[in-house]
Image 1 (cartoon, one colour):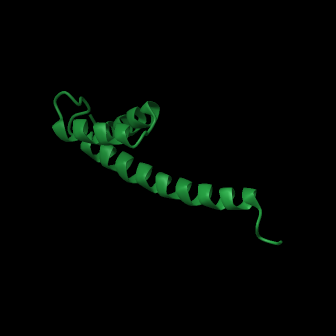
Image 2 (cartoon, one colour):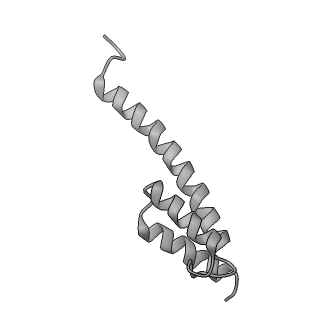
Length: 78
């Protein structure tokens, strides 16, 4: 029975889920980088703090969040 492989189904479902998750990560981390431009400290930047919480809810790794903050703050020239 061609096309009825369990592994094939898992592979396609995982690929679709990973694509959606990657798009969500890109969207949130881009917003984090933009929000970090004026102030990289979330204690003084409520928008950044909210986006960090949203990123944590989406289970984005801490290292990726920190890298996005650093990238955004460096872009601002501070």
